Length: 296
Image 1 (cartoon, helix red, strand yellow):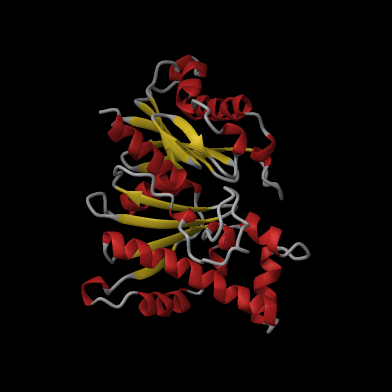
Image 2: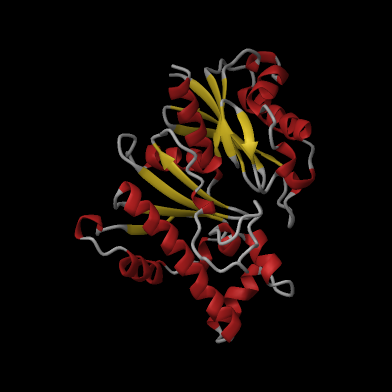
């Protein structure tokens, strides 16, 4: 049975060994203990590569590895991070080539492939749900908003930057664009909007009756519903998974009602949302699955 290493880079870095579409053994993490702030935002791109390499070599050990897959935030083309609004220091960085060149020991010479992190998450969901031959779509909620799809298809698919409002004051997205979903629902954007409150406090206050926070709760759900409706109108209905650190902010019943208001053509009815607990393993599995397919 072939062995691959999967790596997921989001708010931290996680790596694991994958055999037969299952993560085996203990995950390796950087940093090893959780931190309140995103440690990757202050790291040089070469240091990010070094942290990934160290985890890969720990996971691989003395075993023969067939491929290494990395899920990384941003627009990824041919192994280059062309844009990454929440890790701006890696813009233009040839991550795939740099990681390949840095590997030593049993991992040296093993094919490396880099994918968008949300796409890796979608592949992991497809693998665990037995849907490797079906369209799988997922929203990932964290510092930024990711939109992942499986199987891979030509296109950018930066659904987190879907324009969901024409209000010119909505300018909190890390990419600098106005009216984006991420500029409303992203954790970084919420902190910029509510300078005196953490995101958890915003939603707690909303449910306690605070008018300003309650209005924002509605805005978040309308924004996510609008971006989902755009996807439905482009690719058809289906299940939309939601995962990430901030899924506890989401009311799927409210989302369902809002999407129904926005999608009225009968052939496009029938979509639903399914929330999945945040899991490094899903992204690790998906990165490994994508790498395995890409290197055959």
